[in-house]
Image (cartoon, rainbow, N blue to C red; front, top):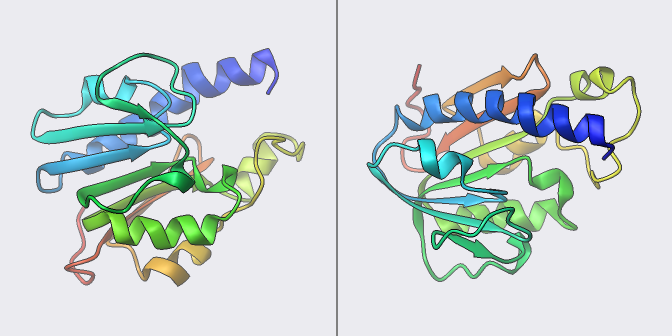
Length: 175
């Protein structure tokens, strides 16, 4: 990523996306949460205290006792979390289908995922490929693996698709 693109992504678009995610998280039951690909403690600092937070990232940008350094693909599935949060990660991993399977194994109840919303993401980049993206993950592909989400929306000027699944009550929607 170039310096300008990095600035736009980290200083403008990421906070907009994470604020939309925080609104969703505030509407669900408290409990344990793992934030895969957390990057830093931005979400941790803003998350309601009702959540017991663990961040997980290959290259975290800050030091915090609640953030563990490691690859998402290597995360052990020994512990389960009430909420599994996976934002802007699937398009970066070698095997997104395997990671999606592992998300189900990690979750006791909720899975919240965000991915770049195609074709708007590419359009906003003037169809210049994002070199760090290995895959394009479409919303219909997520639904193939997780079923119909109880909540979904577009954020960041239509650039991001966000969806929430309730593995226990798949027919109950939140607003």
